[in-house]
Length: 178
Image (cartoon, rainbow, N blue to C red; front, side):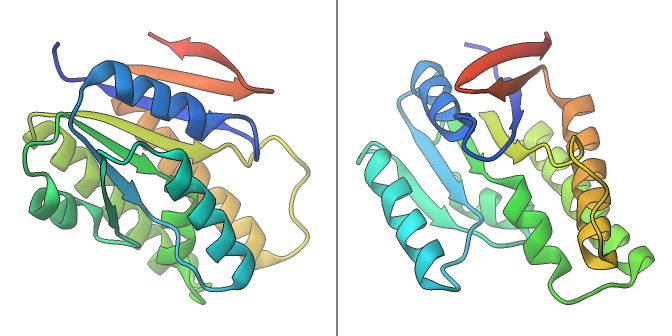
């Protein structure tokens, strides 16, 4: 099967991760799962543990909060599929406490462009999961608006590069780019 890039967007609890895992199973046996989340509190720790239980035991998992391109190249091995879950937390990790828009934007764009270059370089299919956070009301505070705007930019860059883009709603995938 030819390598491809699939981008999956949706709201919280829309079924993005389950759909991404189904696609990964169909694309290849050797899957590298890239987790961007960090267990910074008990709730997140429980979510991570549940996600780990939901994944096939044969998949290799690496936790990479940032610098995806170099870390994926380091860990790719013989993987046929790289599943990144998720871009939402990656952008949050990159932002940290930085509320300087130009600096934060530069970090996010550099990270996403590096990831795209990595996808083009490696002989594997990529599945990237992200939240669509731009459908709601304008956030009240500056940090939340900065986050929404930068995740939107990251989503646009990935969607432009992807062969296929899906929007998930209530567990139902809708292909929006073929």
